Image (tube, rainbow, N blue to C red; front, side, top):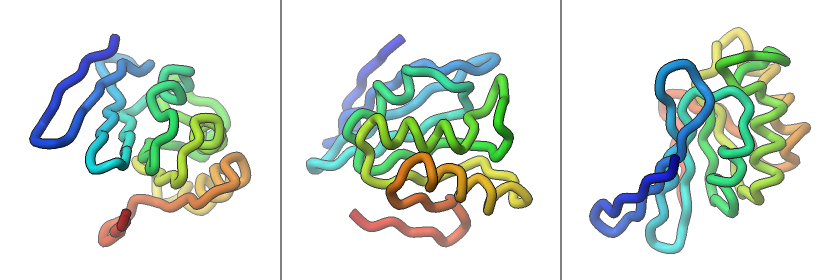
Length: 124
């Protein structure tokens, strides 16, 4: 399911993801830039479609190789690469998995990968 809204000067588009209950990805386009934020999700082509050409993809990830409800970091990196994203930020990371998840995503993406941690600021 795809829904669209405009807030102030930003266009927001929502895409349903694969997760028990409800989870969505949000695409925010404003000022010539694009940010896509993913809620919890199992691997799904919908996220890569929604993130196509995004400047920044923020997505939850896990260092575990398989998960029915979370995105493996390797898959997050692949999605960012296939979607043509410029930067990937991993969220929802267990601190014990952070280093491994970042390494996995970087290997799969080949571009800049950061962890969403307190104090992180990203400038356009």
